[in-house]
Image 1 (cartoon, one colour):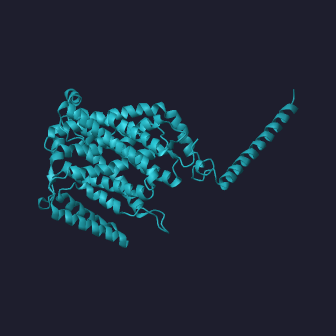
Image 2 (tube, helix red, strand yellow):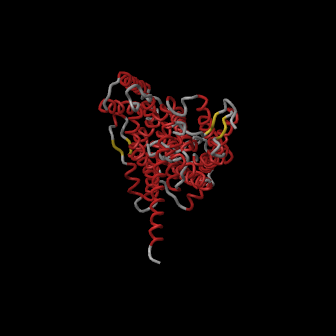
Image 3 (cartoon, one colour):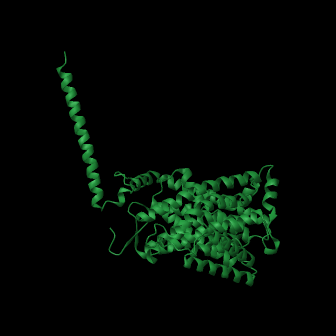
Length: 464
């Protein structure tokens, strides 16, 4: 039994948070399926006679050279389309900080510690493996990221009715992951800085912020401004996706009087389908195209850099997230939800080992001077993600019957008012509605009983 002051780890979400998580993950799940399709298509195109055509399309360049925007199709997908993904990530992070799981520092400690450990341990695994084999340390950040869309696609495929609290924990892990990933990209993968372009980008961000504070509305104002900010950030030498996160963090995610949804939530609702359904799958289509053969797969497990990526994702992520969660719960005296077990945390931790979108991006940035090794690292990301998905699927399947019962309990709505019954047990109106429903059923059964008795008397009075 919990003592006074103890908190529940992975406890039931509030109704608004549950609804938000359900809506967000529904879109991400669909996007994850599209992401899988795009990745498979990229692999098929690369490893068939269409490979040359695929490479020609990916390497075709266009755009104004004077603005440093004469980029290949693959680079446009990496620097442009992923900015949309990180814009949504910025909004998610802002919402989590002001209205979600991260708004309470004590409650935020658990997922944040789990996420930090879930990034530090894979990096450490990579460094140890790479050093022991005499490999390059440049790829230390590759296995640190979690791909929420890919993870949810795996859940959709294996049909696991994961409880809302575990899904929310996975989403929060991914949000914190994205934040640290963009910090890693900005700090460690920025070399030559164009100060003038960077200052102009910051000026654009200041204008963006000022317009938001003044309440100016209209996509025709913000979209051109966002493109200008992005272009200057790209020209500055800082990775252009940083601009997306910065703009996402500026949006207001608190609801004011007379509003049903905050501006951040409204914009996220509009942009998330574009990110999950178009931007990320197109990035995967041009980033996941690596040559896969028996020899190439064997090389993944023999080269220190690629082996470090695989082990970092499969083992490092699992140990990091699970160990961080256990330590955080242990030292904050937060008790695990009575309906769940630490095996469930282990399953989610292994699911966090599915690193795809951001891992592929960091892999390209880490080995820009060695395209062959960059492709081998991409193959390692794919293989590590698949192995993590298989491992997580086995663990989740072992508990699937338990999850189904919890999920059904969370979704039950016997009074049919659109709100799950589990959130109304302390409301008198709910019990009065249920009493009326049962009284109506009882009256119907009494009527049926009287009809059956009358039928039996009629049959008994008939001729022998």
